[in-house]
Amino acid sequence: MNRKTPTRGQPRTSKELVAASSRPMVLSILTGGESYGYEILKQVRLLSGGRVEWSDGMLYPVLHRLERDGLIAGRWALTEQGRRRKYYRLTDRGRRQLARDRESWRAVHATLELLWRRAQ
Amino acid sequence: MNRKTPTRGQPRTSKELVAASSRPMVLSILTGGESYGYEILKQVRLLSGGRVEWSDGMLYPVLHRLERDGLIAGRWALTEQGRRRKYYRLTDRGRRQLARDRESWRAVHATLELLWRRAQ
DNA sequence: AACGATACATGGATCATCAAGGTATCTAAC
DNA sequence: GTTAGATACCTTGATGATCCATGTATCGTT
Image 1 (cartoon, each protein chain N blue to C red):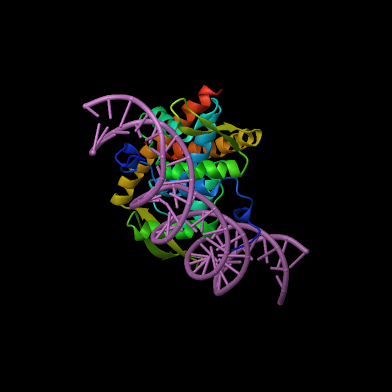
Image 2: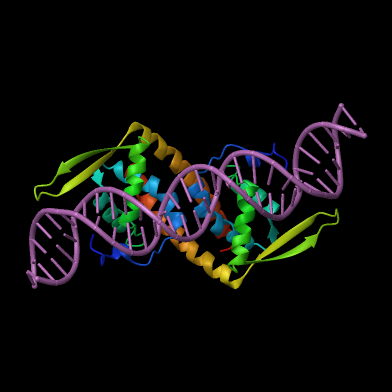
């Protein structure tokens, strides 16, 4: 990996927030169809308008764990340029986990927004 | 601590989500004025409509860390019933940290909601 | 030849909650 | 009087997470 990519920059997101959002974020991205690690990194950067940046060293273990837990399923493929890629797709189990994650997230978010609106 | 209180129940929130939200949640609650551990636990339960439940064994270390880092300041007090309480208030540093946490949270939330709306 | 982007992976340090336990006071029920 | 529940604080060991640094490799452009 090129060490000068913005992937290695100063984190704008706390590591706890990354930990909490990585699973629902990856699962959500995969509801749009198959994807692979490097593309997921770019998707996150794009969708957040550059406000969320993940390191690749963080994402790959996440993908391995999600696969180990049966929430996503991977298959190896080769591009025309000869690069190997591991494509992941969402499993039914992953879809159910995403629904639970979304509910938990929204419960916490609603509480925080309530507090923030209260204090302006 | 009474072991039969709902505080010890099955967590509805993943530990990662707790980790990500505990600091902004505590700091936000303290924008409403001084509070103490036990009351903060009840506030979280109340504000979330019972959807977020923290264990006290998780909260006290959080409060100690926030105090150690200068984001909150504590003082001991005694109630008329003779119970000791440690009241915490938000410091200026804590207020600045909360502003940063809120921004990060909203960046991640906006990204997730974008994905969720996209997929219905 | 060098650089940057693409594409994957690992390992040690650090730091977090969780689970389970502890101390103590007060009130209400039986 | 003693049991139970609520109030109020705290600590420790096990587990598990990202972070940081590093490694491998291909391809296109300068």
